[in-house]
Length: 449
Ligand code: XLS
Ligand code: NI
Ligand code: NI
Image (tube, rainbow, N blue to C red):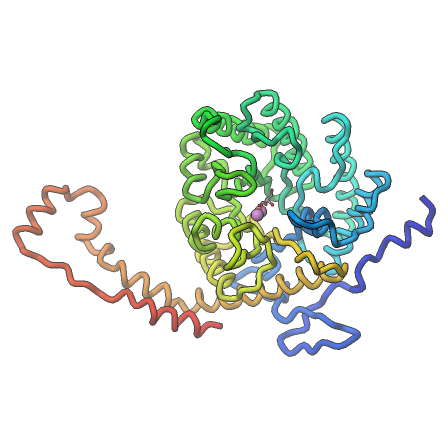
């Protein structure tokens, strides 16, 4: 490749400088169309810098692999690295543009699947080698820029070999192949100092029970996850292993349905202390839950790990993976995260994609920057809710009876069913209904925005 071509590839975006914090009063101009109004990375929120409270990540797949196709339409984005040519060269081009975007956004983290970053070779050894070569390039770019890896993962769902599942495949050789792929992806994540490793089982489930041995498949999945945990300890990876629940899509029924079912699964296989959850807004909706329900439940069960930030569409029943844009929704989600002690080693990964008609390179910048600013604003609302404490006081008051001697005695086993029956029947005691004050609390929450 000659130098002329090399310089022609970047910059890809018209934004040249990292986006700065301009404050709420920022006024856009032709010279500076965007500055963060709320994302002030050094501002301290509940004892931590905003950057560390939010730990934003750009995902590689939607931003650099996605080409604007939908089930009915051809690619619309026209990314130059999708234009054919030598696949490893294209992968390097893609990586350069990816780091250009990370720098422009001033985002601290990124995430990827093995197959996002490097082309599949003729053999697994060749594919793994391709991944390792791009990871070496990442390592240099990361050292230069200070950008870190939030998590890595393996794509165990695109290739036809995985059409009947990876760990849950009826063929043990597919299980073995998936193990080899995850082994490589986990080691690469470790090499890059990743904070987490994610498993999302899009093909781990079934299309029809007519051909499925459900019990056997769950056992396979339990063993697979245990092997991942064993290898993590063997290589000394200190990050969290995360499972990402999703009820369906692409498979009709996915075993990692939601937080509750993954937690039950982890307990069955003795993994509840080893594995945590990566919760995605849109997946929560598909499972018939709110985002904050899934977060609150994971926190309550001690398995909260990280967030995939996106949103669904009220009118569409599939994973539309749109950039977050709903302030109350994100604020309530972050309120639960803050109440549980913060995001920890996790982060806010934008598992979100541009709409098919957003074809300008700069749309990638706008989408992420706007989402980061929205989340930062939501964090400040959540901070107010925590600091003010009124909402929590309402909740505490509602359960105050359980903090009395009698309440404790009921819970810790000092009172039996029979004792309670005798007591209550004897006294003729009738519990008094109390208002749950939902509307009043909704009014309170609205006051924080
Ligand atoms: C798909 C999932 C996927 C995971 C990573 O719906 O969200 O993108 O986050 O494999
Ligand atoms: Ni996701
Ligand atoms: Ni998703």
